[in-house]
View 1 (cartoon, rainbow, N blue to C red):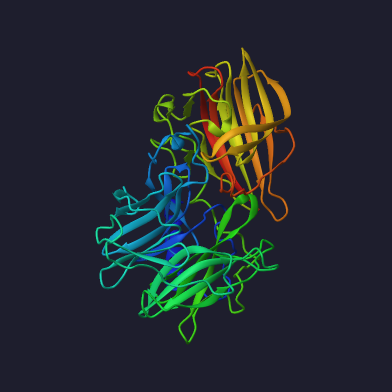
View 2 (view 1 turned 120 degrees about the vertical axis):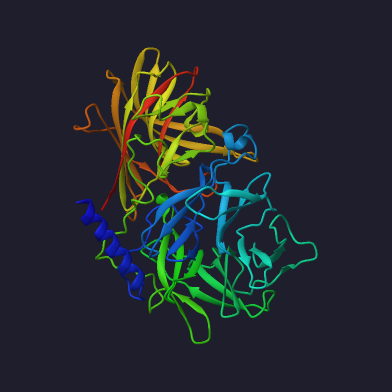
Length: 529
């Protein structure tokens, strides 16, 4: 059985390497139906490597690998945590929607480099490097903040950052800072058609010319779609000319803009551009990139649309999200903590085969609770099921499973005195600036039932089909008979609060005193049609 499976995998890899993507759809978009925004991709040999924004989630800056731009798997994270102040610990404010942002990945002289900025105070960047992208990444420097920057190694050995709206800054050769006396200038000005959003820099050099891709959006123009534009020049400082390279509505969710283009080893080119898609988040869409006779990249199929074969199933998400029985020596790469974890308050060894989550801080609500464990919810539909052992809970503890975002659906076990209750509620976080702190949480309780057993199964089902974006909740005492609880909760993508797609979240926190714990037996993940 195993030999047959390995033969099938090898056959698939050989087919995809020697018969690359054509201009006609051979797959269904979005190529990753989950929140994977701000993608940057480079190729090294036979594989493509991608990095995406995960902001306040830890570990951060996931590195994903693919043989064909279609099937992706997480192979590492660039960093385990960010230690830039107490807000990363959910103290004295939060880092929701901030932190690691709009990364750039490059392969240069046998090494991989990753640059990203840390949005919010103190607002400095990070440059990490590695020879093995699946291994440990080393922090190289902390350069200044650059908005939506694209790191670029030129042929002559000079290093630059394209950032903001058409700004070019030369870096020192060691990447530590801006090069004194180097290039630091605006390389183009907006034309009359670019008075709105223009950001998300991604730069390549092709046949001696510089190509800068950016997202373009102007909400003041009725009917204007989000789109991708390209600025091109013979010299790095310009003059630059512009062309719209993608402008099309896709699948009832508006335009597609911001991403990158990358070359394949057989001379083909690909575009990977994301689309805002409601509660599930910002999803990558794959398309061919073709070059015109006069040297411009054009994205999409022969009609300029997003390729999409609806007779096919969506690509598997198995490399990005999935189940975990917590029997390994470390957490699966599927998981990220909400902000920096309290390391001594979780364990895979206290009870082998279980994840133990211990309370470590008395807090008022889920949104400031440490050690909440998350992973992406996926479209078009998905379902997460968790089995919890509750015998270690203390008075005032709250533990359970959530569809987590600024507006969350929460299925929580509450221990009040010696009694246990299962409570389903909608919880809406209200933020307070400038610390992006949680000023209050508006809670609408929908159901409350007493529990008599010390083990329970909880389930969250997400429906992200067009016009839905709902999470639904159920529970079971034996894992066989399921009972619906509460009403569906609308999941929303809100850039003013968390700026992320919806997540499954396993949590345990104290409202009275620390010292309690729960044991998580398993988390079962299913992507549904």
